[in-house]
Length: 479
Image (cartoon, rainbow, N blue to C red):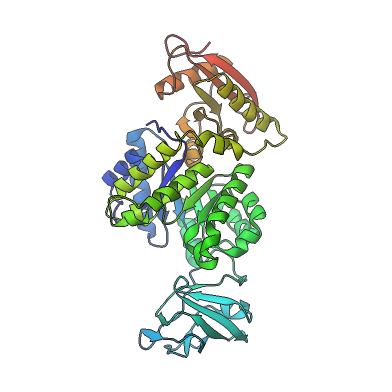
């Protein structure tokens, strides 16, 4: 199934899209990989969804990536005797460690790590920022606050702490159990880590994952922005999680941060996903707002690797329409006259490695000679990532003998992934590349392609060779 766009689409599965027939429709409409939200999915549901995705993959003959999104530390207040209480700006309100129903003066906070970490002057945002509290006195057992804005609070509302660095890691007990279940399947390609605050959070997860899945850091806290270079270095990919980021930081700062994060990832050669509320109105409407179309287009113009649908595909009334709309926007933007110039202006300089120099040369040659495709052989996925980092105008076909590599690369900009056996020699390498270019619809007999690979063949991380080849008249071989 050939996609006529470079940016990838990540669709979340849920009640509206859990059946195999619907997953297939979403894939045919344009979804390149699927997200399973572990905040809502039990282990049995997760395994069922994985089996259905893999069934669709087998039927369609295209590698499909799977992302398991861990819930992360969800911080919530306790319950109230009256379920909801009214507050007045300027009044005092206390959060404490007393496990008793709350009233309009206090509430139980079942998180000792918050009680110990918050300092006077820190902000506490309740219910996605609808209630704004400022800490005045803290003794490790209670936090006495002043109500800055907002007028009510109710049972189990979430707490955001934009000024506070918590002493706990990113993995809760639930996350550890979910991660073990995800790894046990052997079928998940990416794990998204919620509420990353520091590089150490990633190091803990790496010890458990041991390279069996790619780690995608969700950037949704100001503390992560402060150490973003270190976090990118330890991550395999990033997600710009604009929902919580927009709660913990000023809303007007989020668009600039989105651009900053996309460019930082492009420079580092790491995939980046833009998520949250991209086509939010399509949860209940068959068409998006003009502002939403603009939002999706901005992410495409910036060169993001993937754009994500959340509730639109998981629980909305128009999941297929949401995917096809997103695909249509991306297709149109990538054909805008200004698109190549914008992408080129943001292109990162190559690092001083042979593989980077080869990838740069492949793009320049392909664009100068107007070749049909860049074909890269990649076992570990590194060569595919480097080819994508160049953001060439020419299609990139990533050939890998490892199905897990092809699935993981399904999130990467511009890569058309094909599972293919390792070539036996250079002639087989050229013939195989030319044959697949024709079979996948990217070229025809007489066209030229450029092939990058590592010699000796089959050695991971050894990209050191370029070859320009004509596709033979039989469409099955190269010269």
